[in-house]
Image 1 (tube, helix red, strand yellow):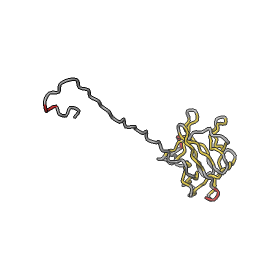
Image 2 (tube, rainbow, N blue to C red):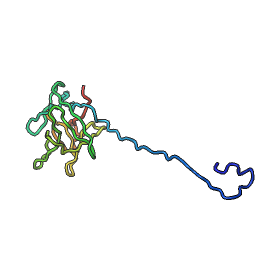
Image 3 (cartoon, one colour):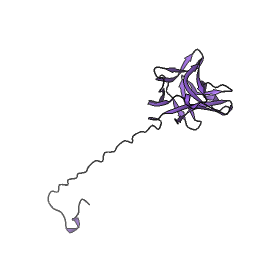
Image 4 (cartoon, helix red, strand yellow):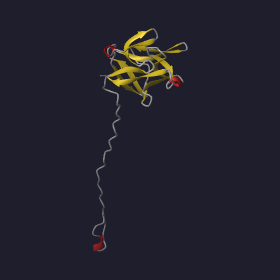
Amino acid sequence: SLLRGWAHGPLTGNITLVASWKQNEIEEPVETFPYEDKDYNLLISHTGQNKTLYFTGTMSGYYASTSENLVEAVLVNVIKVEGGFNLYVKSTNKYINVVVSGTYNNFKYEDTASTVWTYDETNKALLTKVGEQELFVGTRGTYYTGGIYTIENLTAEDYYPAYLEEAK
């Protein structure tokens, strides 16, 4: 107590109380981003065809080419940005973007990042938003190429989202 000795009789005269304390500096927690500083494969588990499809870093028309051969898979890095992350393909020095062409949203490898991605852990899917449309990367039906699809199809029976997996 600041007034120890009070029980030994009344204090008389002027009393100066001096208080000092060391203010604890509160360190803000460092926000960790679990995807940085790792190499990933971008792949699709195509359960309809019982195949694992790895993105190769090349295009087939408006779609991303894939291969069942892990040796052909490109390494992808995740770069944190405001609102999510960019996807950077190490071997080609390109970014994975969505490019609007008329009424279509197309997959494209480009020199600069223009698409901010997020990751849906529950559905193992890469998501983005173009205007008001929520989109994901994946494939559908019996196709073996990567494309861009609307979020309404994410859990549809014949659609298969792409996801990141630490490189093997």
